[in-house]
Structure formats: structure tokens, C-alpha cells
Image 1 (tube, rainbow, N blue to C red):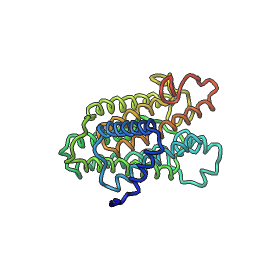
Image 2 (cartoon, rainbow, N blue to C red):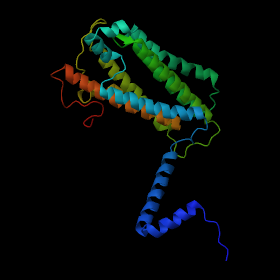
Image 3 (cartoon, one colour):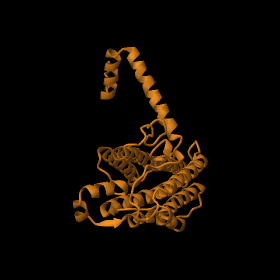
Image 4 (tube, rainbow, N blue to C red):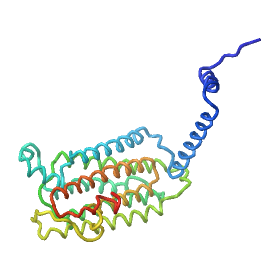
Length: 307
């Protein structure tokens, strides 16, 4: 009688069969089937994962770095712009001496101009024969064009912006959205995702960008003059329910862009942005609570009646 060679995997299965109750084994099989089904459902909303190591690595980096920055916001370590820069600089004069400070308007232009130019350049650099990539590039370009217009004509600024924060955020925007367009370009020739989200994505994008602009406009009306540095509690629109409705609509905007794209990279970038904006809204509400005794307790941070 010949004894066949038994592999370690086969031996492990035999041992498990002997010592693990049949009921437990069945539960494990059901759990694996459910996990496989869940992964299959999620993948039906996306193009296959990119074969580019650069795009794959950047997806992970974007997600983890955004989550880390968001966690830092909750802990009180903020990116130095807007009210958080003004608060820190007024409490400690040393920061002004240690850092290069730009005016807020100049800093914000440096943030949003590079990704806007990336969008414009993409119309020339990439053959936009595919409707999806044309929609994506158009959405990204419009998103940052709106931002540039708001910086120039809508927002009223006070204080400054630390140069290191400008470099970090601007570089992040530039690399992230240039890579999103490149990742989309790599999908040309691939089969479309089973579930087509680009048209719902257009709707979400338009709702998000419109709501974001409207609430930015309401914020700008809080300051009567350009040199008015006094902060006030925002009113109107969804400000009566949450302190950061502009962040809520920005999330909807980014969701729309990721639905138009339907790449894993775009979904990772959006998820990272959601982490950051949730944390930033939490920090913003905490700031208002510390500065205004009459701040309404029922006004949430980001999601009406919930958070």
C-alpha cells in the first residue's frame, strides 16, 4: 500500500475537521460566503483595481494621511488656516516670528489654482474620447474654478495663512486630482462597472457644488467690510441645524465626483476627504462653543440632528 504525500494545507484541514465542531465549520463557511458576496457587490460599483503600483500606493497614502490629519484636528492640532490660524496666532505671537505668513486670500489662491490648471491641462493632454473621463475632468475643473472665483470675489478674509500649510494642502490637491484623472485614463478600454453611477454622480455633484457655494455666500455676508475681523454665529440655510453645512455639501460634491469616476482611487480619495471634513467640522463646532456663550447646543457639527 502506497502512502501519498500530504501537504501542510491538507493536513491542517484534516485536523480542523477532526477537532472543530461541524456547526462551527458551517458558520465559518457561511461567513466566508457572505464576505465574498459583500466584496462582489462592492466591486460591482467600481472599475477593476488599477494595475499601476503608483495609483494603488497613492490610494492607500491618501486614505491614511487624510484620516491622520482628521484625527489631528480632533486632538486640536489644526492645519493653520481660517479661524484656527487666527486663534493660535493671537494666543501666541511666536508663531508669527517663526513662520512665513501669507495673506489668507493669497494662500487660498495657491491652494486652488494648481488643481484648476490640472483640470484645464487635462483637456489638452489626454484624449477625452470617453464620456466618463470627459465628465470627470469637467467636474474637477468646475469644482476648482468655483473655488478660485470664491477666493477672488466672495470670501472676506482676515489674518494670514502659514506657508507650510499652504504647501502641504496645495501639493495634496495637485497630486490627488492629477492622479485621479490619470487613474481614470487608465480605465479606457476596460469593461464598465456593472452598476453605472455616473449620472447619479452628476446630480450629486451639482447639488453639492451649489449648496457649498450658497453657504459660502452666507458666510461672506457675516462680515460687513473686508477688514472686519469679528467672527459671528452663521445663520440661514442649514446653518440653523449644523455649523458646517458647506462641508456637508463639499462631501456631497466629492461623492458625486467619485460616482462619476467609479475608480477605487476616487472612492479612497473621497473617503479620506470625508474623514477629514468630519473631524474639521467637529473641531469647528468645538471652537464656536468655546467662543460664544450663546451658541445653540442643538446645532450639530455636520449632519442635521445626528452629528
